[in-house]
Amino acid sequence: MARYLEQEHHIFRQSLQKFLEKEAIPYYDQWEEDGMIPRAFWDLLGENGFLCPWVDEQYGGYNADFGYSVILNEELERVGTGLIGVGLHSDIVVPYLAEYGTEEQKQRWLPDCVSGKAITAIAMTEPGAGSDLAGIKTTAIRDGDHYIVNGEKTFITNGIQSDLIVCVVKTDPHATPSHKGISLLVVERDTPGFRRGKKLKKLGLHSQDTAELIFEDARVPVANLLGEEGQGFYYLMKQLQQERLIVGIGAVIAAEEMLQMTIEYVKQRKAFGKSIAAFQNTQFTLAELATEITMSRKFLDALIMEHIEGKEIVTEVSMAKWRLTDMAKQVAAQCLQLYGGYGYMEEYPIARRFRDIQVSSIYAGTNEIMKAIIAKNIGL
Ligand SMILES: Cc1cc2nc3c(=O)[nH]c(=O)nc-3n(C[C@H](O)[C@H](O)[C@H](O)COP(=O)(O)OP(=O)(O)OC[C@H]3O[C@@H](n4cnc5c(N)ncnc54)[C@H](O)[C@@H]3O)c2cc1C
Image (cartoon, rainbow, N blue to C red; front, side, top):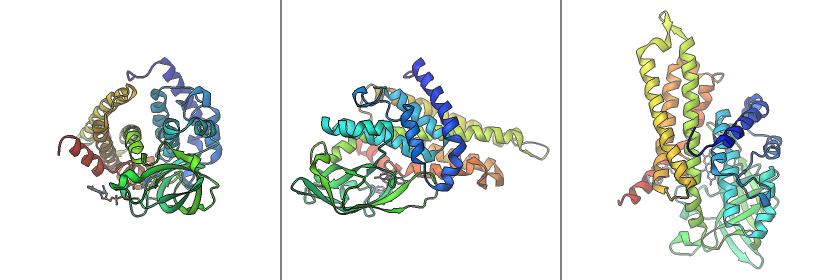
């Protein structure tokens, strides 16, 4: 057990596993078909204390430490990467509300985030700006007690289902440098002038809801500004450490799952009168992958520990994000190869895992952007 986990964490994991065995695993294939996780599942997660357990007790949470979030993200990933929207809500978006929200905003929003009544999303990416966040075009111009928001967001996780969206906007489109004009606004479900665009069809993560969001003179109350005007970019940079750590956790768990299912498969499949597992190529391939996964896990656990201690580890987390997701993609490709033609068939979970892992090197900042951050931080 990792150093940051104690007996209570273990009990939490067992009850979560039991919950997911009953409420998620039997339905997951159907959710993949439907292209959506039903809201009823979110309600159940909330009822059972599995959403944002870290939130302060006064807003309905349990004040739980980050170890519980690690477990939550791990166990959701074991079921399938399509559940990524739950972890995004619980440990990526809601932390913005808790960290930068006023007392009034926290009372207004946090209890519903914990109960599952409110699903959240974060909208940074636009059709014309992904990696280059400072280049976003969505504007929020003050008009009395409201901001008038115009623009378009795309690839937004929980896009269709979300009730509260932390939206990255330009409150000062003329600021120089441009990132100083960025602010965070919370857009609520029934905001006039706000609508959902297309629900996007994707290579993988079929059960995850990914969508476009459209703002046409949307009227968002000034009371929904998060933190200070012009500070949005800095808030994002600070919170992205945890987001990237969570993507790293998902990558390691996905890799572990793929390795395990492949070990079982090669032991029972036969060719040339012996099991596939008996070939030296199979053994060396899987031994190498097991080594990569174990080394990744050790690095990840060390970073989780430092994150819990409140250390600023942006460079190391950027390293973990690119390396761990690349590692998991390599595991996917090599495991699939060991399945032969069956690996290409939808009825074998390795096929879904192979599709789903591809995006891990793209979202939460592409792996190239991670390397650009590392290069800058080592003095280049
Ligand atoms: C399934 C899914 C879910 C997502 N969920 C969300 C979400 O919830 N909220 C949200 O805001 N966004 C979300 N995204 C968007 C995601 O964060 C972006 O796709 C990502 O940041 C890359 O932006 P882009 O797609 O515009 O690619 P681009 O920025 O156009 O990049 C294209 C290529 O150029 C490379 N590149 C760009 N700049 C540089 C550089 N300086 N140096 C070297 N190479 C560079 C990139 O690495 C990439 O390989 C999601 C995306 C997907 C696919």
